[in-house]
Image (cartoon, rainbow, N blue to C red; front, side):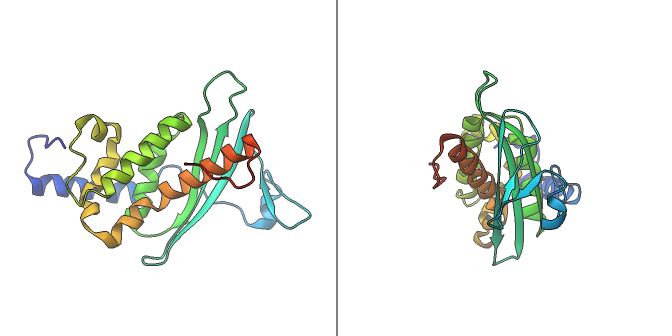
Length: 198
C-alpha cells in the first residue's frame, strides 16, 4: 500500500479519520418505509403476505438482502437495482442504497462500498467484492498488489481493521448484502428460484 510519505502512525490516523467521516455522513443511506407505507412507494404486497420490490428504473430488476452481525449488533438491508441488459449495455448496478444501523466500521464500509460499486457492471462489482474480501483476510498486511489496492479506492482504509477478527464481519456485512442482493436479482432475471450466485 502507498504510504504517501507518512509514517505508519500517521497513515493509521488518516484511515481512522476517513472511516469516521464516512460513518458520520454515509452515502447511499436511505430510510426504507414500513410495510404499510411501502405499498405507496413502489413495493407491492402479494396475497401471500410477501413483498415484491418494484424497480424505479426501466429495464431493471430489484432485490434486497438483510444482514445481521450478532457479535456487534450491526443490522443492514442492502437494496440493489440491476439493469437486465435489454438496453444493450452489460448488466450493471443502476441503483444501490441501504438502510440500517451499527458501528462506525459497518456504516463507513457501506458508504464507501456505495461510492465504489454504484454504476459498475455486475462483473466489476463482484471483482471488487472479492478484492475487498481478500483485503479483510490479510490480517493487516494488505494485498501486496498496488493495482488491486488502487481498485478499492477509499475502501483500502479497512486494511487496519483486518487485524481485528471481531471487526472484520462489521466491515464485510454490507458487502455480503451486496453480493446476496445481486445474486437474487440475477436469479430473477434467469428464472433460477434458488438465487445462488458464485
